[in-house]
Image (cartoon, rainbow, N blue to C red; front, top):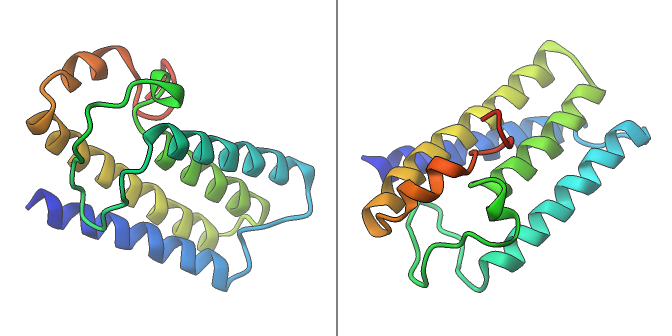
Length: 144
């Protein structure tokens, strides 16, 4: 059930992004959009390099190799989802409308669904994740 929910979350994220791309609401020439999107891209690259050669899974599937708690994972448990949400939110805010707000909310909802399902699956494989989660925020340090 958790893996199916994670797939739904992934599809929601992809659908929201696709909607924003179709409506040309992802990018903007404004430095107020470019700056957070560049920061989001840098965070995503940093997280991906830190995570290592582990592959991406369509359905949440904790990988072998141990729990990653270094790099951006020292500060937030889900830096890649954080980066995606920051990137999308900046673009949607630049083209603010009901439609872009809806697509942005779909991306956020999908990311949150994936985070919660992944966390439950990771705890099964790595019980020490509970200690890590107790001292690390999901996305925004000291907030969420």
